[in-house]
Image (cartoon, rainbow, N blue to C red; front, side, top):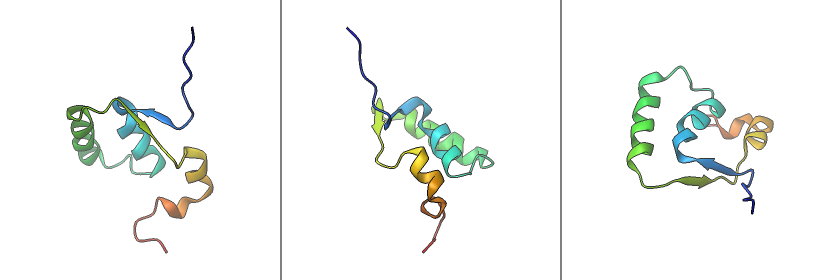
Length: 68
């Protein structure tokens, strides 16, 4: 028996890497470490995202702070 993993499913352990990669914020190491600790301490195992990486790459203004 196989299991299906939807494309919009992101493991909580890899979520900080995913988030900082799609928002082009990988240079903020201290903030990423803090966010990683927050994700590790939460009891969430998976996140189901509406906005996929492809949608965010097509519309970069969604990831910008204070963008119109």
